[in-house]
Length: 398
Image (cartoon, rainbow, N blue to C red):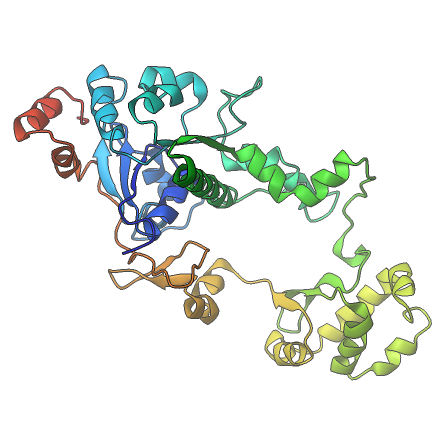
């Protein structure tokens, strides 16, 4: 029994951001129907695309659609829209990523569904927003979140390097959390007013928010400096270094008054603090290249396994640049539940929020394509004969 037990959700979105928001609702007890078009959500095939990890499971489908029930409706048919509208009458949340210009033809305009159920929360995920010249422009997180927010340009290795490519879902999952937040905020309003309403999140807005530090600088007219190479980093105490084993790690010492002397103690060279080039923070920045070289040579004398207890023991902020396989195998997220067991005995990535006293639903399997159609329609009052007629008419897919 979760906090959202009894909440009915229809997830009519495709790919990642929208469905990931409903997965979080399901983690806390909501009943989620995964509504797909004939042939299914194209996300089902993403793990087979070139360059993606090869495995025995449809791993992205597993993490973003766990515990949902499957229904196929061909919403291009009026009869299928009638089925959806019947379901909407008893639904709390409807999620879509259809661009505004397509909603009319699918029978899912916000005002259309609101007329059927004034308590319905209509949650829309778009690439560029509901209004403006690009409202109906399609996009993915790689384009609208990553490329258009400035992030792709800013995180290149240095100004001379090509822009950095994103990985699948990199912007979708934080955008899904934003959409979840909008939905929960609307639920809170509904508790106070009794009325549902429209909520929306765009990939571009989420990308701008993720890059808000830098975007606000641009809005305020700040002067941007080209990103330097690692060896020319302006802050040596916030830089990448390589240990003797070849492992890269990021040093992030913001409290230099305390942490600079502590770092020198770790090195066993407190006298470096008396070097006139590095005696103050301003001088360390002025002579940054020399200090980067000095620290780099020192860090290259021990392996990461040797440095870790020394740096941790001194209370210095750092961490190794890990591979995804290492991140997945780490003990820490298993201890906190950030990676948790599935009902099948495997592991899955959990949604990131924890609420004291609330247990999340066990991580069950994702739905088969249309696999729960009969049960869902029976719950909505359809007879076996009516369901058969809908199937014969192609309303429930081929």
